Image 1 (tube, one colour):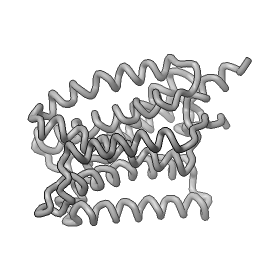
Image 2 (tube, one colour):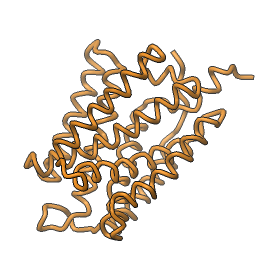
Image 3 (cartoon, rainbow, N blue to C red):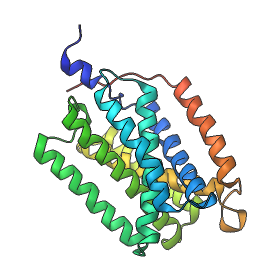
Length: 251
């Protein structure tokens, strides 16, 4: 029988190349799916937050209570966090009127505060230390805040930063490549690089999602939020099916 630590940590996937591929599909899908409901279906951001936050809370609670790693449950929770994060970021940026820069600043402070409290409470923010309910609660809180921050960063870069959707995707993709090289070639903290990469995949997904669904005249491919979402659902499901999933190892 596996030990308690092994059983608990087995719920967290190993951080592999496949992990990042699925994460990017999830963040891109979260952008188009959230916009589909909040904008195209005219639900509004508050209603969208309510719609997506409920499954996020339920899935996170179920994940925390589960005894081993279930890939479908883990990635469903990630997807719920990125759709809820998109709606929350849009509410901060637009409904509260503080703009993309203001929203990104508030959300960056929130992510850093979550990581700081997590480290003070448990001594580390390394995902390999997520072996109990308390650590996993911090894990999902920080992930959701990072997804929300990433949306605001993507919108800020594409609009206020003047990069456009394709330009923003290239910049964030290049930044992610730099983080990967730093992980391979330097002794910079792998924990720091993990969270940097985790945050960067979200604005990459946000700009990619907008590039797919926005009209041609706005710099997108013009697929529309509905067709872009359907295509991304298929790609996300295919990635889950074809990319091997295995639990990580506690250090």
